[in-house]
Length: 212
Image (cartoon, rainbow, N blue to C red; front, side, top):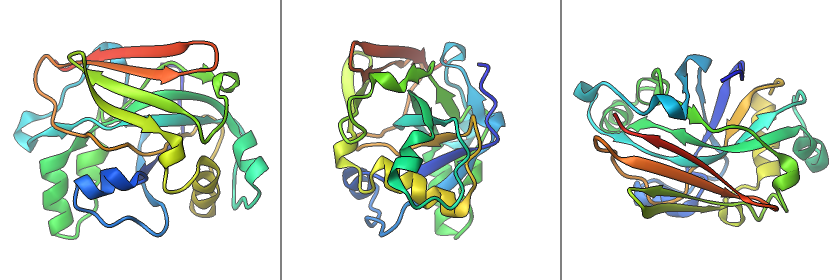
């Protein structure tokens, strides 16, 4: 993967149904956390984690590549113009460890930013996006649909997310924004086969990976 972002900004609880399934309150503003570039791994390498740390959950997310610097932006058109490409990604989460950290009031990095915790597909030109509030995608595991994403159901729109993020973190060219996962997350098991599909204007784009 040639992409070398300075950071990967992730949005938590961005779909109300996902917040509900984890027993979390629906947020009043975007919940943000970071993954380092060292967390990136290609789909071809497959999914693996330290089994001693407990279960690993999949979270399929629409992911954005930023091509123009955004800092303290308030204009919707400016925020959306900075998006250079899209893809689907996996925000992998060591859920048992995350729950323990949250109980202690500790940060989530050990559960969210480990090596291999971020997997991204090849970038797709934004010309394939009909409208930012009409982007649909799905995740299948072993030929069973597990997650279905629709940006019309985001608590905060894509533009609202980018504007909010830019108030806290300057987004630089090649930075990645993972926009959050819909309901349906669960633990992965050995030999699971994952298929992710993004519906584009002219065709569907598909990526696959597997659990080692």
